[in-house]
Amino acid sequence: MGDDRSRILELLAAGKITADEAARLLDALESGCGQSDDPETAAKSGAKGGSTALPKFIHVKVDSVKGDKINVKIPLSLVRAGIRLTSLIPKQAADQINKSMAEKGMSFDLSSLKPEDPEEFIEALRQMEINVDAVNGDVIRVYAA
Amino acid sequence: MKCPPYAVSVRVADDERRRVRLWLPLFLLWPLLPLLLLLMLIVSLLVDVASAASGRRSGYTRLMLGCLRVAGEIKGTEVFVQARSHNNRTVGLRVR
Image (cartoon, rainbow over all chains, first blue to last red):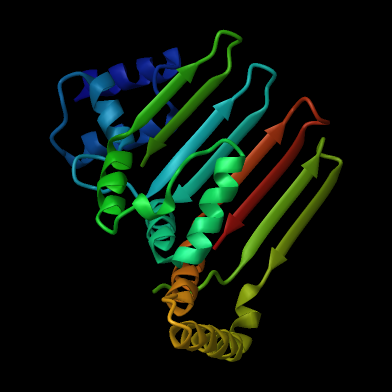
């Protein structure tokens, strides 16, 4: 247990995991939840909300090399409600929206979204983790927690 | 369907010199919500009936209810922007 804690703190100091992930992982260690032997791997799964907790938010974090920071936290339930909303749009309005989007260069058919799609999409979002390290030093992270 | 947000807090700070904190008590508007919802429901039902009478199928009432559901799910949204390159301006928005 002490070695795991030291390893977690080393990863945090090295910048390989964030403070949030380290806190979650330490909480998981204290509660005795089953974790993988590798704290770094466990940190990645811990960032997804632990072994049993379902993620409730999508986090978008941008750290610019110029020092600018952007943090956005969006409830997953909002994403689900928004996707379901597209299936409720009347056909006449949907056709006009599709036409406007096509004129802007986005060819996407709103009517192609089916009611069962949101659950699959939400499930995929829960497993998603995007890390972008730009050449200029900007860091972008998108994950569900 | 969840309750709509009860407050929105906005914080803007400029280089720690100017600070603006705004707390919007949206719950004060809740007593007006039933009347507003009733009016919107009447309009959407009239539109749906008129569309059905003309042989077209619409669903503006369902769309309105879907919008209300989306409005209720906004709770918990947080946006934080720190722009060091622009007078170290910090903008925070939280929907409760």
